[in-house]
Length: 238
Image (cartoon, rainbow, N blue to C red; front, side, top):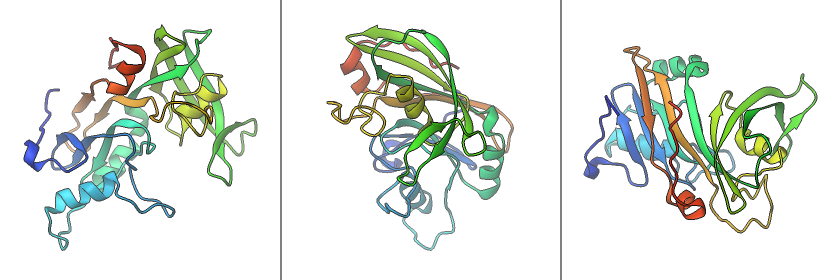
């Protein structure tokens, strides 16, 4: 992508791929299985801790740090944006509605409508599980736009245009629509035979917080996807 400054391999942080880095933002490709940021219940190695170590270059006294702008679920792979300053974080979060986000998902079954938008009010219960509620005073209105790209062997490949960014939104909307994401042990079938979640943050486009330029990045197709459904000629959506 134009404007991408990918560090030499020896400077790449272990376990992450930096897609773009400048003085204000870092865009990384997160692997499946890595948390974006630690939680009260889980203090394991995360994108946040890895990149904090990276920008500090081994000096624990360094004041350099990164700031979380948004998150991906632990089992979701793909593109993630982090800010290099509080001001950049505030700008990116304040302009989040202008950020264009496309995901690839493989779901179980064949959808009757090959494209459309799933909308509902989402909320979370005490067990941290997200669900749709008819109570508009409790749930947050959420929209997930989708388009079927390929159907094969009881699976459907979807391009997901994420119009809002609630916790577990894509997974909940697709599951409640009768087509859970492959490998989703929380919102799908508990006996799902696949240990990898087939959800990938494929492309992202946003306004740079300092120079105002529009930046666009896209990733390749995960090997797990091609093993499931063969060759994928998927547009980035951007």
